[in-house]
Length: 500
Ligand SMILES: Nc1ncnc2c1ncn2[C@@H]1O[C@H](COP(=O)(O)OP(=O)(O)OP(=O)(O)O)[C@@H](O)[C@H]1O
Ligand SMILES: [Mg+2]
Image (cartoon, rainbow, N blue to C red):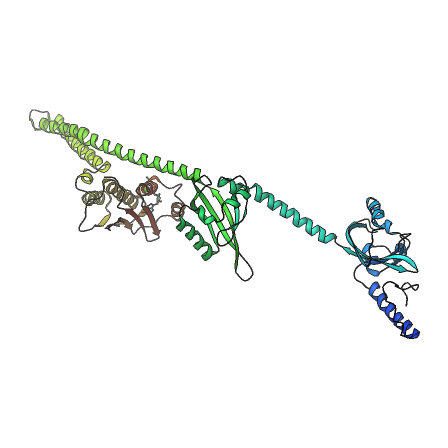
């Protein structure tokens, strides 16, 4: 049956060969027309035929009716102009004569549906003869959703590009070998380059930026083992050869088989922070040194002056009380005062020794520890076991003073906080380092305090922070281990570098 009961596709069918009989030809044509009609009518994409002169619709398929919302009768009474928003009509007039042989791709247009919504369509057509008139067979593809998705993608890309380009943090993508694939402006600026292009042209391999190549190897090892490396501190070269501190983070981006495609990550310059930390370290080192000098000065004053005066006073009082000519009431006052003066003398001496044990300078750490621990046990009732190397050799003064202060501070903490009745001190001397451990069997350091210590120490008391700083000044490390059954304070210090 012909389309709309009227005609047939003439351009779409080929003339049968001359040798085929007329009847057979007509039969074939009829079957062929029937098939084309079905193909046209049930095609899932909107299709129509319009008259090239009047622009009137001559035939429309079901998908066009459903898609554009008009009935077949309505569409057949319209021209293709009626389907366009008014602003598209001039372009339509301009495009109409542009048609070549065969299939024509007309590109993107806008259509207006019956309900007024506008859609984006892609038009493909074929010029044909329809009802003996020059016509056009049109295939319409709705690309509205596709365009919307594309726009959303573009917007998202634009957004991320903007974040990437304007970030204050340097961002990069590199190959596994270290070749830069992408860099943003911040990254270029960190290394002293004008633009990302400038950086990428000059630095062909980021491995060369590292002042310390084993540092790079360590970074890559973490990346390959854990798939990511966060907060890695390293020193890098800038364009002018100067050295900066950076904080680098990266992760490996892999394909579905797990193969590494590239690394991506960020770089932040932390040179200012490092400088501030350095200044702070120098400053706290100086404060600790001043504190020690002050203590030593106070200790000497107390010992040489106050304690001497007090003992002269006590001696005079003793002499007085020995003369028998005194009134019994006065005698009693005198002996009480004498007792007090002697107590004060002992107190001032002890205070002086605690501030700065003279034994520490004179005979060394092991003797000073023995003396200090005996006094500590007397004052606190806590039994302390001391294990020191049998062949102890004197260490640089600074080291001995630090170790003594750690014992002093740790034992004070045992007494004040642990509730333990016992403690132990162990000093181990190796060829290149010294290790000191102070243990107790008390209730342990509260979790929160321990967390603060591991996170860097802000909010701790002066005791632990001071110990850590003293140890750091000498290039060593302080560790705290603690649980419900006790605490271990462990200081490990290198023997090289400490002052006498
Ligand atoms: N041996 C210990 N057993 C249990 N808790 C401890 C021990 N040593 C330290 N702590 C805990 O750690 C905290 C921090 O100790 P730190 O010596 O820094 O400060 P502090 O002793 O409170 O005050 P100070 O500044 O006078 O030393 C203590 O307040 C205590 O809660
Ligand atoms: Mg303390």
